[in-house]
Image (cartoon, rainbow, N blue to C red; front, side, top):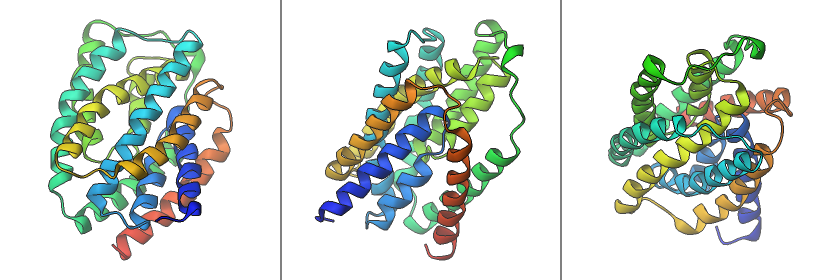
Length: 251
């Protein structure tokens, strides 16, 4: 892992992950297997990936804000709820053995592929936001459980957040993604803290990966959410299926 091309690969993967995560989701399905294939134990790969995601979401949030897009305080309420759930999920992840983690990650990958392929069409012209009252409270409850999952693996959670906020809160995709990256930044801080306290973070690889993640996120946040969507989804489906087969049959 001391060769320059390993680091170049991490940065390249990180750039793709940051871009994909910001405009859609599921990018960790690329970075997690990459870190595992490079020799990190699954739990350490999981923790190391969080370093890059914190930087990625901070850059994406700044990018959206630079374009005048913010959903405060809605994003803060959801973020705090997910923050609390993430503590639980991260602690579970720390205690799971490597083979079980790989099997769970493989199943998550297949589920995400199905979501990508069969998710319903989104009609932006019918949007009328619902960010208060019962819809706010429903979001707070749901995002607590999203936080548990995000603290545990996080891979593919972006798709679930997009679907929930689009159909329940009726937000357009630009504002959905602006909310999503802010929420992930908030809850990822607690998840990362749990991994750090349990010595499950490789800071060197995490920061190198973060160079790519942050760059990709900044670029993606300043582009249209539909830019390159078809190519990204096709590429992601192929990669997810490949990684799922590898993790399931060769843990």
